[in-house]
Image (cartoon, rainbow, N blue to C red):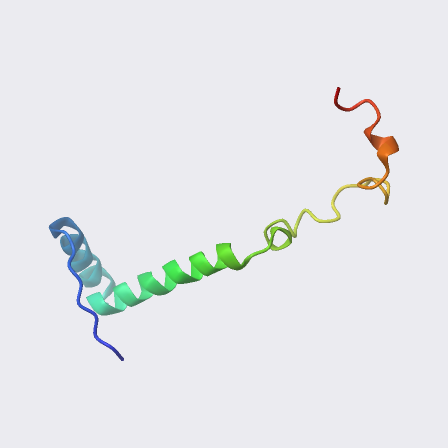
Length: 79
């Protein structure tokens, strides 16, 4: 495992110490978990397609099969 040194503001340092004591974890473990969480959320948003993000909505509307291709359905929309 590699060592990382970082500088944090006093308030963040105080909060980290307090949290570490409350949870019984080392400060290093908390920072590792926070980084893992950050990168997993970041990858989840960037790596997801529109379909992945709206998968629960796909197929939830009852409509004609050619709704997106048939111009007759557009009659009356727009100017």
